[in-house]
Image 1 (cartoon, rainbow, N blue to C red):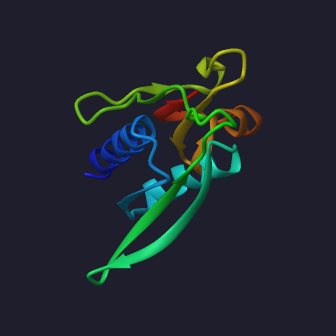
Image 2 (cartoon, rainbow, N blue to C red; image 1 turned 135 degrees about the horizontal axis):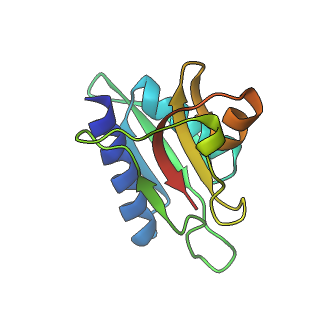
Image 3 (cartoon, rainbow, N blue to C red; image 1 turned 45 degrees about the horizontal axis):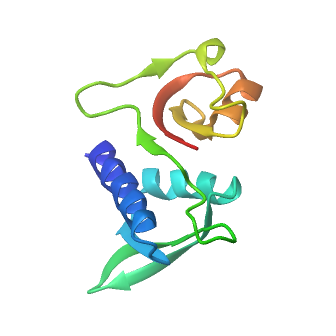
Length: 131
């Protein structure tokens, strides 16, 4: 279920950036929050805020654009899907576009970027990639 919600979140962010929205509201789960915190720490989004709508907890994602008004994120794609999970050992984790992109994976140590996974020498399930 959580991978479906993550897929929905990725699609919402991608569509909001195409439409040049300032922010987008997504469901609040531990997986989504952890992935968004990695996006925030790597500079792909401006902010994440907890909001309540009809007594339900959601996350507002404040999107980031460059000086010309173009989205900072060129590609945001789910790798693992409900029908097929993609696992990689830490030696098989590769850099995206000469280290300009980021891979987010779920490991035994939690949700990590590919940079941290390589440092910690841990592999896991590839969730998404962002460039």
